[in-house]
Amino acid sequence: MRTRLDPQDPLALSSLLDADDLLTIQTVRRFVHEHVEPNIDRWYEHAEFPRHLVKPLGELGVLGMHLQGYGCAGASARMYGLACRELEAGDSALRSFVSVQGSLAMFAIWKFGSDEQRLRWLPAMAQGDAVGCFGLTEPDAGSDPSGMRTSARRKGSDWVLDGTKLWITNGSIADVAIVWARTEEGIRGFVVPTGTPGFEAIEIRRKLSLRASVTAELVLRDCVLPADAVLPEVRGLRGPLSCLDEARFGIAWGALGAARSCFEAALRYAGEREQFGRPIAGFQLTQSKLVEMAVELGKGELLAWQLAQLKDNGNLSPEHVSIGKLSNVRQALAIARSARSILGANGISLELPVMRHMTNLESVATYEGTEEIHTLAIGAALTGQPAFR
Image: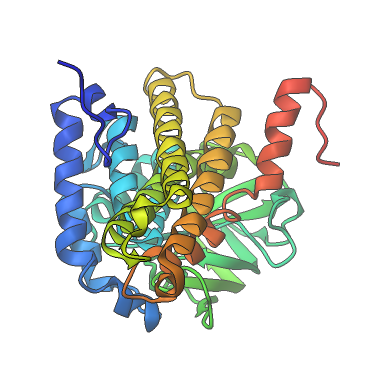
């Protein structure tokens, strides 16, 4: 028998999933349905991060789920991607928290840290007992992290950090910050407990996007750290950039969750909203929009699937990740905007998820590499001619 087209899965991609994949989807989707969907409009409206969900997310097993050992699940890249998709279907803030915790802060310690650093932080972070953040971006160094001004100097056997980091997710609720700084040896990463004297996190308010996410400025003034605070296994920009690739992989999957939520809302609304004596789903222009959304969602899923296959096989390059982040976030934004047009005036209400997703995706489009930066990264790989400078 032929597979009937399912509006929720137009390309029948669920047929490619194994039992563990399906269990991941069911478990995370149920968590989002029970704990996020009933409250997210209020959290977004009042700019509240659901701190009480951190521990349950640890119990769910999604914090650092793609890492091996230290209380982490050791899941496949595909399972991690599927979890990101389901989390962002709830809200980008939730997936951003999980990405920063697991793919930036935890991954940096797991990949480049000492055994002592891993044992101290990773089990607690995996369980949701400790929160991490990742300090790379600065007021004058965003797309070009090589221009960072934060510095670390030796003082006897200690390190002294000075500088400012900006737009840091989880910053003001973190127990530990991974801070990247210039040293005489090149750029190094430091594990900074946020209670260290000289460390301050100032929450950034009055945001119009990612309102249910915590964003902060980190200020370090004569912040003294012991010698063993430095990440021993990496020097240079390779360290932070490899962490960003981990998180961007999750974004390529997560954006599809926000897009799917918008598509489903528009499809449902179009079937219920009547104008000129019939549901607007029966009009050609509305169907054209819905078809375009479904097609782009399917293509995005296939792209994310291929990235996961490459990652699980150890063949994923930074340029592959750039293709995924660039294309899937771009299409997610287009889907959100098209869905909002179907909803008409109702599309700007928090009673429906579309405008919330759309404003969140505006941030997703620029953090961890703007469209322009990913375009240049892909262009350099295609031509062999870097065009950044």
